[in-house]
Image (cartoon, rainbow over all chains, first blue to last red; front, side, top):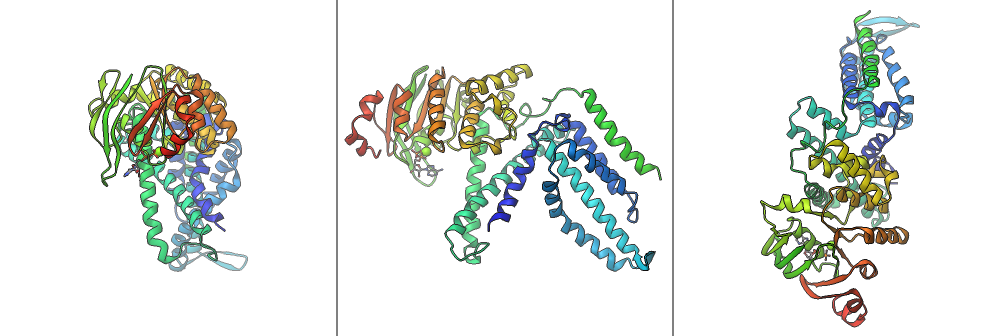
Length: 261
Length: 231
Ligand SMILES: Nc1ncnc2c1ncn2[C@@H]1O[C@H](COP(=O)(O)OP(=O)(O)O)[C@@H](O)[C@H]1O
Ligand SMILES: [Mg+2]
C-alpha cells in the first residue's frame, strides 16, 4: 500500500544507481555526454510547432543508445510518464485555441492545434529522455565537475550538489517516517491524516536538517573546505578517441537533420 | 598522542553532555569508550573533531591544541567514522567516495588511485569499488565508510558504534579488521564483547564523566559494577 510512495522516494537513487553500470556509454567522458545532451535538446526544441514528422527521426537516439547503455526501458518509461502531465496541460490549450484545419485524415479534420499538441508531446518526451539518459549514465559528481570546467560558478555547483544530496536524504527520511506512521495507523489505507500533517512535516524537516548537518560534518572531517576545488572535477583526464567519436556521431546527425529539409 | 583535559560540553538547550572529562590515547593505543545511551560517547568523539560546542577544557593532538584555527590540521591527523554510514557515503560510486578525502588533500591522481585501492584492499572490499553506495548492505556500507576515512592515512581513527546495524558475521569481520589496523583507535560502543576483544584499555563514561578506566578484563568482569554504570 505504500508502494507508490516508496517508488517515488527510491526514484532518484534508482536512476543514480544505473550510473554504476560499466557499458561503453558509461565509460565515455562526461563532457561529451553533457555536450551531446545539450545539443540534442536544443535541436529538438528548435523545431517549429507543426513539424511533427521531422521530429520522428530523433527517436532513433533512444532506440539505439538505451540498449547499448543497458538502460531498462521500463524504468525509463516510468520516469518519462511523470513528466507527461506537464506537457499535456501545455499542449491541450493548443487544441482549443488553434482551430483552423490543417489536413484531412480518413475523413477526420486534423486541426493545427492537434498537430502542435503532438509536437509538444514529442518534444517533451525527447528532451526529458535526453536529461534522464544523461543522469543515468553519468554520476552527479562527474556532472558537477563538468559544470565547474564550463566555468559555472563554484558556489552554484556546490549548492546544486548539496541540494541533490539533501533531497535524496529528505526523501529517505520521509519514506522511513511514513512507514512508521502507517504501521501505527491501522485502518488508514494511504496518506497522512490532515490533523497529523503539521507534526509530520515538522519532524520531517527537523530530522532531515539533522541529517544534512551530519553529512556536511562528515565532509568537513574529510578535509572539505567548502570550495569543491579539489574534491571534484578535472579527474577524468583528456578526451579519448571514443569520446570524440561519440560526440560527432551524436551531434552531427542531430544538427544535419535539423538544417536539411 | 591525544590528550583531553577537563573537557566540558554544554549543548545550546542546556544539556551538559560532558562534564570535566580527562583522558588520553597513546600513539597506536586502542581504547574503547563504553557507557549507556546518552552517556556522552558520541559527544566526546565529535568534540575531538571540533564539532561540539565545548565550553571548557582542552583537546591536544600530537602537541597541537584544537581551536578554530587548528581544526583543519587536527582533522588531517584524526579520522572519524560516524554511527550512520549513510551520513558519510555521499558520492554515488564507492571509488569516488573513498577518493573524496585524498582529493581534498590535493594529492596527484596516481596517488589518489593508490590510496583508494589500498584502503579498499585493507578492508577486503576491493570488489565494491565500482558499486553504487545506495545499494550496499549495512555491513558493506560500514566498511566503505571506514575505507573513506582510512584513505586519508589518519594517525588515529575514531569510530562511533561501529558494530551497530551489523549481523554476527559482518561483526566478526569488522572486529578482525579493526584489530589489524596499525593506527591508534578510539571507539564508542555499548557492545561490551567488542570492547573486550581487540582493545587494550576501556574507559567507562556515565552522565558525561569518566567513572573508571583500565584493562578490559578488570572492568568488564565485574557485573555488579557494570550494572552501576548503566551497562
Ligand atoms: N545536538 C544535541 N543537542 C542537544 N542535546 C544533545 C545533542 N546531542 C546529544 N545531546 C544530549 O547529550 C547527551 C549525550 O549524548 P550522546 O553524546 O549522543 O550520548 P551517547 O553517544 O553516549 O549515547 C544526551 O543527554 C543527549 O540527549
Ligand atoms: Mg552515540
